[in-house]
Length: 308
Image (cartoon, rainbow, N blue to C red):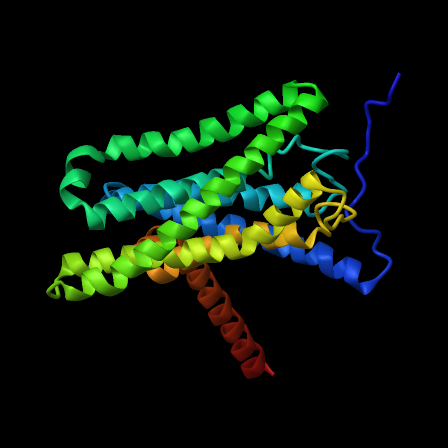
């Protein structure tokens, strides 16, 4: 009978300075990604004005995924885990698939911005708030339904389904690239001809933000995607000891931090909401306690000095 006390070893051996760096990096990254993306989630959920805008619903969906990705790094980055075939201490791709949710969410978000700016009448009439929420739910259901089917199939059939998934992702990436170019053209030329107004500025901000986010996401995620595709189609491609030392996977997971940072940088409304609903409430009590502590130390120092 196998032992129930199966112990999973750490991702590195701690025999070199590089091992310590990798372990510390994943610890710091997981914490920062979970805190930053989580603050975006809370900022949107706690601000009614943001919840009523479709583009912030897409931001909320990706930020939830990024928060979970941050927490997942505590396992994928700190322990000896290898996803894929063959696997070792695997999560059956449950944790890495958070990035797959983001891929589909960004695709819907790009279509949303294209219709909102290019076809406002159609957008106002048909793209309702609940329709956007349904699209976000679909991203989760589709991603994990395919993953569930893949995990219950025999390995030979699962590999074929995985190949189909890779082909689907190729199509999605091509569409995203074309939409990114189209949105950039709209932001630069079509909106440039409109008279200055708050509505035009809002459209321009939303287009610019989604273009930057998608470009950053694809730049960090595509190397991992290409490497996986090469490994499936041939015996080539780079192989790594585990997920913690997989450079391409590290780049892809970095989106969990960069996406939230770009959201906060590119949207003044979101930046204000995150500060007022999350960080202000956290920082103010800490600042008050620190100030009181410093005043107490100064008072004690003066008392001791005067008595002496």
